[in-house]
Image (cartoon, rainbow, N blue to C red; front, top):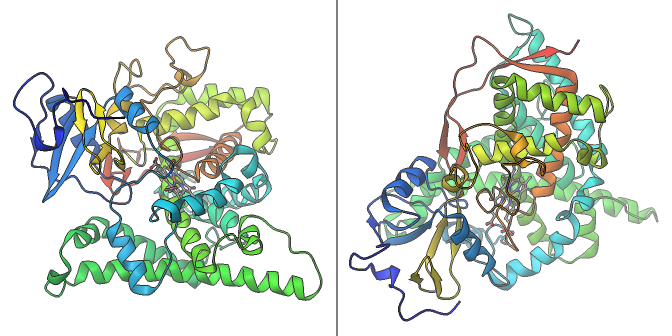
Length: 484
Ligand code: HEM
């Protein structure tokens, strides 16, 4: 969009007038995607309006917390939108001679990889073929719930469900990405997987510190070496793990070919055989996808279970639809999901209330006029969809957990709603969305078929906190009670 001469120039701030821009001295951190604490999003939107400017050290960020303005920004995007500055990720990759993956790449490099990957995992029908593999993981998850319950005093409570769902999500996404099982849901988890989990934990535990490290000039690193060292160490661990599994697959494909067999398989086999990406690009992409696909899915599942336990009437309605349309024990596949629209609605409503990525980052690639303000090219934007998700204007009775609002027949629902875009929107939206949906839909159906999920005396009111991602502020404990 071209700049309008009459629009105030947001970048340099403007004298008070209608819709004046406020300069904030708060820390708006540009991390994984964009961590702009959900509390701050809401507080600042109330105080400063739906578009305001913040600064983090020398860096300025324009926050947009309005459904229509967010839609305007995302609809105006070019072919290769730029998310936010990923310099520290890039620097690590340069240092170790590694390639960038979808998250960290920009421009032509990103476009090339996205074109390849989107052919295989972007559409629901592409991932529907993984239903069988995901169901095997779900069978192990349910077994694990029986084991954990049997160890509880009341024979029903599972403590810290996120630990369980973390293992499920990791196993599920790895089954699809590596075409092999990792053993996360077994009693004794293999050592390489334990090491990966440690690297992942390290990555998240010092996320903010490491990003400060990225923002600190290099010459200061000798004085404060730890954050950068840890950042590199965690990436080393993540890359090492992916490389082990990709190489294993390579060897097995080679073996098949040596025996004159045609190698068949899923995503990884396709990537290897098509040679559309270099081997380094394959390592980088599976590393970044695994990183992006585990906590996001597990936190969402933890919240969904928490909400269902606290809203038994909603749970009962969803369960009744499952029994009516699929049966009590039918093992669902992707083809069954449209028959239970309340399960889809449950996921949308969970992500509206607890969007695991509460905001999203973009760098404008052209001058834009948003809300009457000129936003010059190169400005960093924070799209605050946590704030818009809680607006009554976008979602009537927004604080209530009402999955049915997402059903077409619901009188309060609104189609094409940019108020809640937990997977982003457009050409740079989440490439793993369909994988996450498959994993969550199928597991929610089966969990509800097997168990009634109930609060236990240990279930507290859990608040969300931001820690790079929006996470439960404390462990969630619930009872998994056998269905009669
Ligand atoms: C509930 C689960 C998930 C949520 C809420 C989620 C959300 C998001 C969001 C908001 C973005 C940024 C989109 C944008 O900038 O417009 C994103 C990007 C991305 N996600 Fe997810 N995600 C989830 C699961 C997954 C899974 C399972 C995978 C991999 C298998 C994955 C891989 C990625 C990748 C690679 C990107 C970067 C895409 C690009 O830049 O082209 N995500 N995700």
